[in-house]
Amino acid sequence: MEAKLTTLRTEIEKNLSRSGHNLASFAKISGLNRGSLSAILHGNPSKPISLGQLDAMTRAFGFPEGWLYPLYVEECFSEDRISRRRVEPFLVRCAEIGKRQCIDEVLGRIMEYPRPLDIIYTVAERLFCSGKTQESVVFYRLIVENEPDSYSERLAISQYRIFKSLQSTPDVDMEQKLRAVICFEPFRGLLPEDMQLDGLLKLAKVCFALHRWKDVEKFADELRALAHGIYREELRRSKGKRVEAFQAERPLVVYYGHGYLMKASALTKRGEYEQAKKYTAGYADLGWFELLDDEGRSAVDSFRLFAVANSFTLEILMGNTSVLPAYIAFLAEHPGEILSGMVIILESANRFRFSADAVLSRFSREMLRFEQFQDPINVDRVYRLYYQIAMYYISRKQYSKGIDYIIQCLRLTVRLNSGKDFINCVTLFELNRDASSDTQQTAYRELLREVRQREEITDHESPRFGVI
Image 1 (cartoon, rainbow, N blue to C red):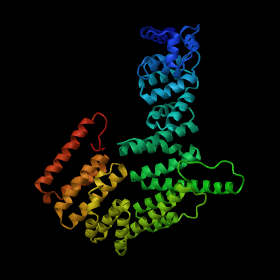
Image 2 (cartoon, rainbow, N blue to C red; image 1 turned 135 degrees about the vertical axis):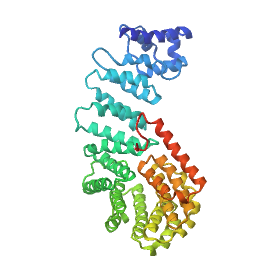
Image 3 (cartoon, rainbow, N blue to C red; image 1 turned 120 degrees about the vertical axis):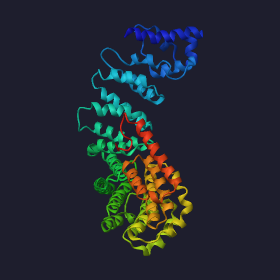
Image 4 (cartoon, rainbow, N blue to C red; image 1 turned 90 degrees about the vertical axis):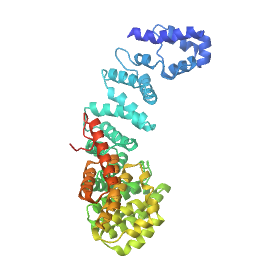
């Protein structure tokens, strides 16, 4: 241990000599106190070096940040204790600049001391709250793996933070999302109420993307009940002596409205349209909601718009084609609703055998931009639209157009990593193979070959599409 301490100081002394500085001149260019430098380098025992002092020396020598970090690890420990004043900022900074080897060495040693999770959790929270979400995950995972109390709030928050980190992680596939839901779900009730609200909303949204409609309903019910309970308590407190306002990531009305919206959406997906109408009415007009700020009032307006769009959706899905002209006009006025609206119209057209040609013609220009979407929810919507269009054209014996859309659907299933949808597309193509052109068959074979090559690359891990 002593050798490493000497090595850190020897390295500093060596560079002082090389640069031609004495303590006085180096103190001047580094901004450090000469007495502190002397105590660090020549004290008996040597004065510990703070991370700020080490970084100041590094800058004065002209070396890149983190130059001496591997040698600083020893500075954080003594035989019987950890220096939290040094180790916590050190771990945070290592995470920020990508010094993973230093992190691994420190974490390996921390676990040998009493109460190591207190330090690890503090570091994780500092990183997360400063926007370093992905950097915090390695620390939260240590909490999850080592927390002895399965009912601790610290464990629940760590699971929540890991789950939330998925929102900012690109290219997360369906299997990863499902695993994340399974890991986080049992801990949702142990969170503080503000985090419970956000956690339930995110669980509902992820389960919606996974098409787990029963789970969406369950989390939406819990979200609605929790938001309503907090709202009643906030009203009571607002009429008495105000203590401290409830703070959540979003205004309370957002969670309350989404409790109705997600419930109605799940019921719609399950074909329970009359029930869905009742819950749609629950978020159609939230103007009665008190304690609204500007963001809350904006959310009320958004929910009102969603209710109009989803009311059209329900009528179309029930076969009420009389509202189709009004729905098309509504979509034209609200371009952000066009993709989801077209999915519904084409699905209904296939079910009730009415013409959707006017819709496809009216929004043909907008459809050209759909494949620019990168987020999984909209990519899934584009897939579902194209699949419905493929069936629409095939049912009308316009096979060439329909098969073109099947091929586009196949490409999207690769992006979505959805084995079930991939099989549906292959089945639909094979049923109509005789009507396909040589060009379409070549494109189809090339797509299958591409998928097979991906499978071979990942065979040592797991099948990409869950298909063996």
